Length: 157
Image (cartoon, rainbow, N blue to C red; front, side, top):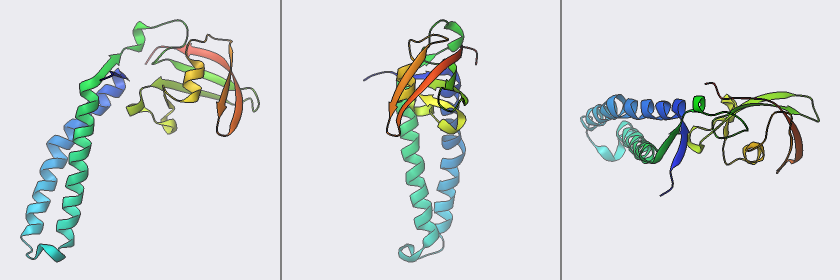
């Protein structure tokens, strides 16, 4: 199976979520199920069914996180420099709107566009990888073709 690239920050975030689920969420939901069972008839017990559904979600998320963590390849951006690679923080200028945006290129499990964490497999990240400051890139997306100029590349966390 392929390794999953993650930044150290992303790896720690997923590990913390896993610890939280195992040490707090799982015991709490087991207790909630036990309390709901005490209310009697399970067929019409909404609290019981809600707790079982939440337990199913928690157990699924635990399995997902364990799988990601077991395949994780942690990449430390402080050890990198030069052209754009995984874990780079890149500031780009939209050549049409003159709007500047800054993104960090991260692994799929830690990608969150609202936090400016760009999935390494996204069209924009793929266009940026291998480029240098001052280069222009053309990105084809469902919304049309966009042109960006690379303003800066940073490997600090």
